Amino acid sequence: MSEDAQEQTHGEEAVVEHGAEAAHGTDAAAGHAADAAHGAEGGLQIHPMDQFIVQPLFGDGPIAWYSITNVTLWMLLAIVGVFILMVVGSRGRAIVPSRAQSVAELTYGFIRKMVEDVAGKDALAFFPYIMTLFLFIVMANFLGLLPMSFTTTSHIAVTAILAMAVFLTVTVVGFVKNGAGFLGLFWVSSAPMALRPILAIIELISYFVRPVSHSIRLAGNVMAGHAVIKVFAGFAGVLGLGAVAPIVAITAVYGLEVLVAFIQAYVFTILTCVYLRDALHPSH
Amino acid sequence: MEGDLAHIGAGLAAIGSGAAAIGVGHVAGNFLSGALRNPSAAAGQTATLFIGIAFAEALGIFAFLVALLLMFAV
Picture (cartoon, rainbow over the protein chains, first blue to last red):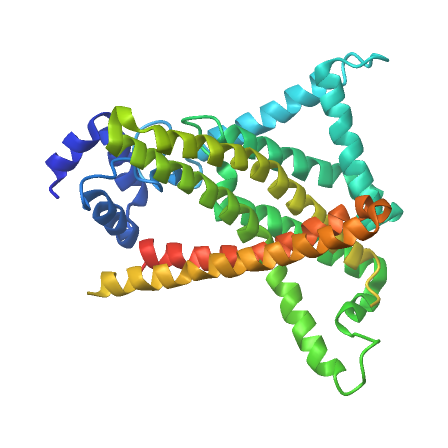
């Protein structure tokens, strides 16, 4: 399909498309894939992956490391949201809590209990970090559920940084607390002697795959759910006013996504606690 | 032609989502059967349940990722 036809099809989104192509820049493969997907079959006008395009807020030049993009904006909004929730929640300190206060207190108690149960009492030193992780992810996930918003946690670049930070923290903590004894994590002392070297290799591999699966789990779940919503939105766009079934499906998937947004933040946090427990008590 | 093969591959990778569904169902079903036998112990094991589901689900997400890569990056 030619560029003109594409712009007519997309109407108002043409500006966005230009931003997208500029954003892709040298990434010819991605640009080609987007073109091919947009040109195909004419029907699906809402492309499911368009919502994940990173574009600069000001101007449409190539993205440098200092560019202010929509990712920057929505991460900032997530932090502001967490800040407002916790500041408003902890301002009154009433005996009978207000709504904001009870949300803040419930979250605090929930995460604190989780750290204590899963990672042990001595892991409470890391409670502020884990609380920050949880609040940021859950707020980013919920903000991403607003229409026309951008989900920062759907990008592996974002979640990979979070997971790498956890991985490095846990590794450093393990070596600082236990010294060389941390390597006992890889030496399964309950297994027969002949098997231990093989198990050590498997344990080593599984240890280094942790940040990969940790980050891809969050990003993949969030991205898949949002893409599914947009696929159904594409069906609704094709059917026009008679699109009852897609709208019902969107509503149902959206409800599931609200659940997923919370559960994935919870899973990310609880796995952090599990890794922390391994670092603090590495013996098998 | 190359694009067609990539689409077939993406479709095949989607089978992995079904495999993950079997895994997640296995975890949740076994949790439920255990929880119904001993309901008082169930509340303490929900964290383990979610960890198990997360591990099972991650591999399905990997399959989804392969499908995405075949669709958009190959």
